[in-house]
Length: 293
Image 1 (spheres, rainbow, N blue to C red):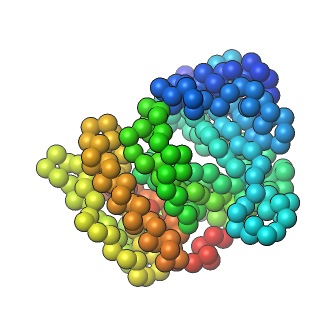
Image 2 (image 1 turned 30 degrees about the vertical axis):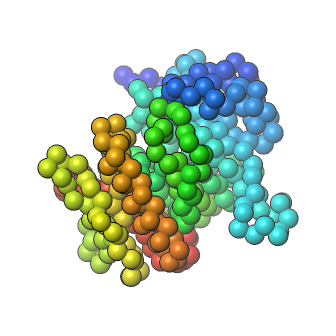
């Protein structure tokens, strides 16, 4: 029988010291990137969200976020631009794939809703398909902003060696989109549905003799209402064994998504084509803000 996992608010220094240790296990080899316990306590006591996933007294995951302001209308008062900035979430490797991250985000959303805030934002590496599946597919976040080198040169074991480019996603926590995704009251569309609907494939990858996906020489420009953008299904494994190819994917995806966002498209879904071996991974891009609902 699997261990029972509970999500709890974290407020004590003892809990925050556990969060420090968990960070070292999730993002190894960079002590300077660890958020210290005293700052975590300050966030928790001043309107932020610090939640832990617990198995008994052992912490197996955490999430951290705080109040911020939306940059979209800088001339408006800060009170009118309040948002939740979700800064960090980590789950121990042995507990991944068990819904811990989803439960942590759900707990975060609950507190954000209680505070009367409609928008939460965060960043993630757009080439990580597992994160894309959670953030875009399961949670209903959308993206229309590609940020280059957000964190400069990163030194932890997961991120070192490549530019720290990131998607900045918007999670409109009161929207129909988010409600439908999280309540699962409508069956999500699959790859075949988008293909049958005429979604344009912008960058079909080619598999080399070793079965590794290589980006197309130059992505096509989106022209219709909907498009598909391919990424590697396991970018971390690719990076571990073929860093030069991982760098090609970073440069390729930077050009692709910056061009799409500048043309008025936004990421609205993420799908897997499991009919192929290996499985292929695609972002769905849609034209216009109407897709935010």
